Length: 164
Image 1 (cartoon, helix red, strand yellow):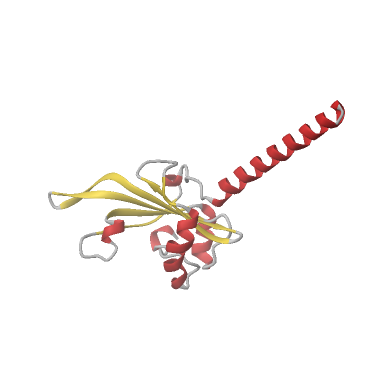
Image 2: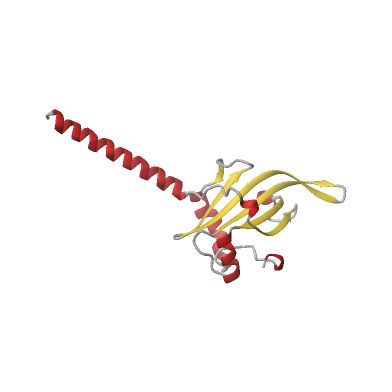
């Protein structure tokens, strides 16, 4: 093998590796819903509290707030959520105060994002923007199973009168 052929071979292998790594990273990044920076500036859909006695208590105990981005707002109005719709379920610990509940640390931040292929789900631990307690693969099994039963394009929350 002469030096020109060898250099061509090395260049081809290097290009293949670069493209393969780039595509792998893009596919991996594309499979997971991103942390929804700025979600508290989206429309607040509703708040709720899950206390002892609720079947949801072990997983979702505390105060929660639901937020929707502008594309998700179109879905709330029409009943069909377009690709790019993102909803956030922000869960905070609560402690009893005198005649009240006081919110504390964030337990988790659940994200539901509509893609051209359907819904994908993620859950971020506490205040982390990167540590996931539910990945897209986990969500495709566990989250999607419950959400798909709803008959409302997999969305649990309803748009309240105050947000319309």
